[in-house]
Figure 1 (cartoon, rainbow over the protein chains, first blue to last red):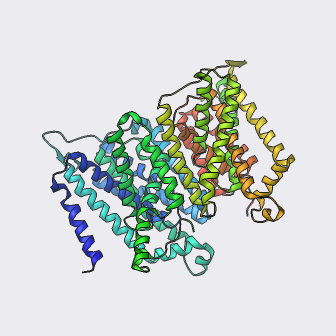
Figure 2 (cartoon, rainbow over the protein chains, first blue to last red; figure 1 turned 180 degrees about the vertical axis):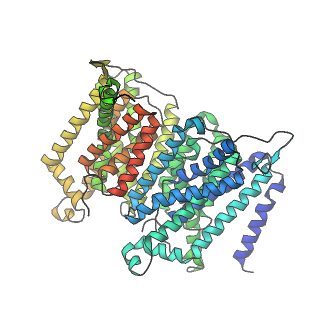
Figure 3 (cartoon, rainbow over the protein chains, first blue to last red; figure 1 turned 30 degrees about the vertical axis):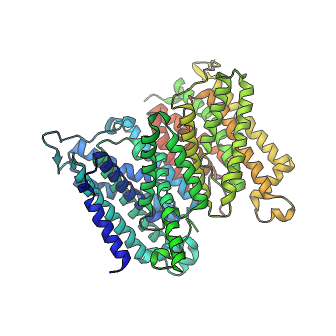
Length: 339
Length: 291
């Protein structure tokens, strides 16, 4: 076994053993949120790393959360069926917005702004359909669990945070596997060619529109899963926390801060952003609202100027330089967004 | 449904939409000029407007500065912010990918929003200035909105004259047409960029003067006006000021009539959906030419 494999195995075991270490529910809650957001950010980076900077992932997350909850509340359809439906809906929306964009060569700023409009449409639709969705006040999935009956498999509602921890670990690892699969596939080489020079890539036989659509739909589907799990875990969703410009920007920035060109980068982004928020909440309290957002914003500015590959990307870069040259696929020079 | 053309409320809605269009047109001006010249989208544009609104509010309410003076201070303040934004944040990464410049201003968005929450709290604040309404037949038109509309039109004309008639304006237009050639003609792009950023900020400040009369101020107000301003600019063809002007009125009518027939959110949903469709039909903007 090589050293990286050993580190990976040790890390995996450490994560699996985490709930047994007797941490408080609060720590477990933070760990769940880190992994869940880490998964969503990973989903974004599946397309973001190729220069398809989407500010519309709030829409996909909102679809995941709301489709599942609406099906459960209004039709009694279990989230186990609801989630696949939400993924299909989300992919369809990804296709509907992606196809014309890629067909008509809408890239860069324009792509970012079109997708931004999409996430606002999603948020406003949820608000406008307030008779069904609860509008801005948000909605709670009809609860079937109580003190006597703390677990309902069919409703995907669990009071025990340990169960949620393992569900989220599974989802997160699945996300990493998808990321790796894309990284190792022809799609990656095709997309890297496309993000450098579309016409040249097309002339070499890359089907530009189709390749872009594939990564967009994978990314949209993953984000929908994230949104659905988020809703089931929190048992409360509202349009602001699942859709709209704020959440879309949060997704983009956390992925960038962690490093969207490496597999664990987006997860590191989730660790940084959540720990920052939680530490500030613990140390300075609720009275100084806004300080966390302010520091977060300042960090992002500094990251994009000085560390465009994110924290983990930078760390790996430094290590490789020490080791004397690239070693392994993650160390190869990766294009900057949109390069 | 009644035939709408005889319904005074319908016409009131149309006129309200027209007036709102004036506000949107003004909001889009600053963003458009910055994009047209520097090729950068300020995602934090609406947050600059928010800071302008707070400046005016505090100068007027807490320090007793007369309103017109407070507004001038607000415009100057945001103009300064615009220049600072360019000098300290955009300039260092101007040579990198355009999308990085868009994203970096997104960081500024969070920073300014957090700063406003910290400094001014989440409370809604209102200037409490009202100029009443004008009655025309069965319709009531708020004077502030009419004023906002007129100011927008004047600002557009003044900006147009500035760009056409002055040396600086000519230099700005020249830079926006060919970034690489202009340095050879003895125009320093760095200086023009800085001036343009200050100008864009100043126009955001002017937008703040109008919004402060019309709406409550709170730290998240940028999220209300930001997206719609981007859509207006993009639909008009980013950097195309006349296109943005027309798009502003189309958007405003969508929102007003959507609010008339259903709820206001439906107006926004329709406007955004229309925007997305328009992007596919005319990605270069309603007045843009195919390049």
